[in-house]
Length: 412
Image 1: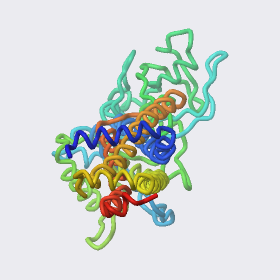
Image 2: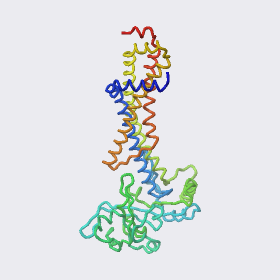
Image 3: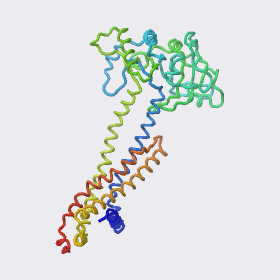
Image 4: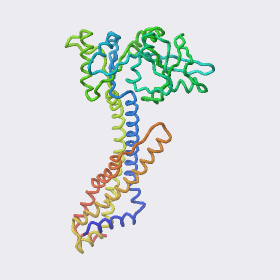
C-alpha cells in the first residue's frame, strides 16, 4: 500500500472523528504552547540581557575589592582586604596589553533639586576622562569630564538623561549648577540614554572628577567599603586576548600586595562573562522547572493519544481484518495507525506552536519582557510532538498489525 494512500486514510479518519481527535490533542496543544511561549520569552530575555551586558563596554575588565558570582561571600575576609589605590591603577596602566583604564568610586544621593523640580535616588560617580570609553558612554550635548578637570579638581559634572528629563524639562541643562554634597557643580555634558541593566536604571547618574569626589564625599566605612571603594575599569588593546590581559593584571596586583604563591587573590577581577554566567545560573533552574511542567503536559497528551488509538484499534478490528484479507500487510496496518497517531500529535503541535508564539507576543506587548522566536524553537515545536506521537503510537499500531485476520473478521 502506498504511503500517500495510507496518509489520506489517516486524514480521513481524523475528519470522521473531529471532536474526539481535538480533545485527544488538547494535552499536546497545551504542552507545546507552554514550551514555545517559555522558550520565546527566555530567548527574548537572553537578547535583552546580552544587550545590557554589552552596554557596559565591550571586553571591559572590572577590578574591584570583591568578586562577582553566586554562592556565599565571606564578608569578614573581604572586609580585611586592602583597598585598591591610584598607584595600583597607574601600575596597571603601564601594562602593554592595557589600552584604557578608568578609576571609579560611587555613592548615592537621596534628592537633588533645581527650582521646583527634584529627582531622587541618584548615583554619583567619581571618575576620569577614560570612563567615557570603558563604560561606553556617548555624549549627546556638551562634553565629558577631561584630564584638566581631574588634575585641577574642578567642580564640573556630566549628567544622565534621567536627570535632564526630570530636573530640566523646559530648559537646556548645560552650564546650570546643581548642589552635590553641599557644593555647587556646573553641568558640562549630557549623556545619551542607556536604558536599564538587570532592572536597574543607568541614566540616573552624575559623573564628576574623582579628585573632586574625594573632597566632597566622605570615605565609605563599614559594609559600604566593599562596594563603594576605588575600582578600575580596564579596556584591553586586544579583546581577543582577554585572558592574557587578566593574567597580567593579576600578576601586577599580587606582586604589589606581596601575596605568596599559596595565597589566594585579595581582590576581584570580573568580566562580562562573569555576568553571563551569573545570569545563566539564575535562569537555568527556572528554565528546567518550567520545561518539566510543560513536559508533563506532553506526556499526558501522549497517553491520551495512546488511549484513543487503542480504542480505535478495538473499534476498527473488523476493518483491519477486511484489509488484511484483501492483501494489506502487517507493515501497512502498522504504518497506518502510526501515521494517525503522528498526525494527531503533529496537528496538536502546530496549534500549540501558533498559540505559544501568540501568547509570547501578547505577554511581550503587555509587559516589559521581550519575545523572540528563532528557527530552532519552531523546529522543536514541530518535531517534538511528532516524536511523542511515534513513542505513544507504536504500541497501538503494533497491536493492530498483529491481529489475526480471521479472528478480526469474526469480531463483534
